[in-house]
Image (tube, rainbow, N blue to C red; front, side):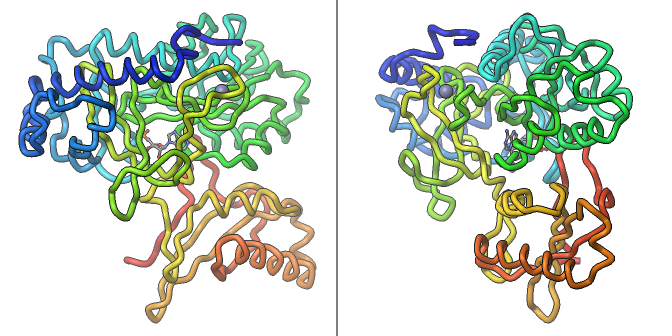
Length: 434
Ligand code: ADP
Ligand code: ZN
């Protein structure tokens, strides 16, 4: 078993929960005493210093923290230590508005890289690996998070950052890169560039893709694996919780293992905000258990997923979350039907003659919403035959209708004409409120 902290990652459930309870009590007390924001919130909720927390389910007495709380207290309002104890600042990429800020003490950074090292080793990384980090370096937690975690494993890290495809591929070949860290969309882009380049796949030593920071359907993963000859593992995290390392795939890939000694996950109903049980799909809520710089109680991630506590065939015992369907922000409501882009992606990638790149355009005319899906043909010759083109278009629309329960309009476009992404993909163009 390729494991970074085996004793912890395979602890019996009871012992994990005992650690969580002790650390939850500590965190509540710490938040109450060290941040004005939580002091007020916990006082109003009657939780105060946490002496009321006797068992894990008592977490329900603690109010949720939202992205708006981070924005309202931007940049340092939720910090729990004096500025002199902070050694690093990161901020979100701001996909959905004003960035949120995360700050770290020395100890936070150390724990963070432990968590990332776990995810990396669970994904197959060893000290022999040479890993190219093609996440954009900067305020984004992804690049430096993976950087220090991979160094802790003992792998050699190449801080390539994103951009300049030719150079990315040259570095991979020249330095004998065995693993790529990137977003799934950038990995897909690079994998197609390899296919199109003069150098065959045998000129590369790639064997691992450690991908994360946006949803990746199993179909997309398969495409990347096929193009690049790698084994892909998915990892999940966010700025508000400190970055990557919150959860990640093991070789079984039947859900991403949480670092449960550092993060306490829950699932709540998106409709009622009430806690849901194991296996039920809802919004992921996470409480940090060891963070000192900016601890977070019951953070509503907006990511839709489910949890299982069943021990995994890999031997790890920490809870697993399923691949997310996406964030609630990305969920489109078209004619009253809820649609996640990942559902569309799964359908598109499983069909012949079209490529994995797509764009979703939502419009409103005469108070009626419609969803257009632009997708690339693999072979431009098809554009010559109206009959064939129309047949393919209808086939895709029918398949989408059976999966989504919604009539969509598919537009087939020339190969390689849709935008490619070097970071997180932006595939939705919502023109309804313009
Ligand atoms: P921003 O909110 O600006 O994109 P972050 O980098 O903090 O900034 O993004 C965190 C979000 O990215 C998560 O809440 C989630 O929606 C998404 N995300 C991160 N990793 C994954 C993953 N492995 N699978 C699906 N979504 C992910
Ligand atoms: Zn596992």
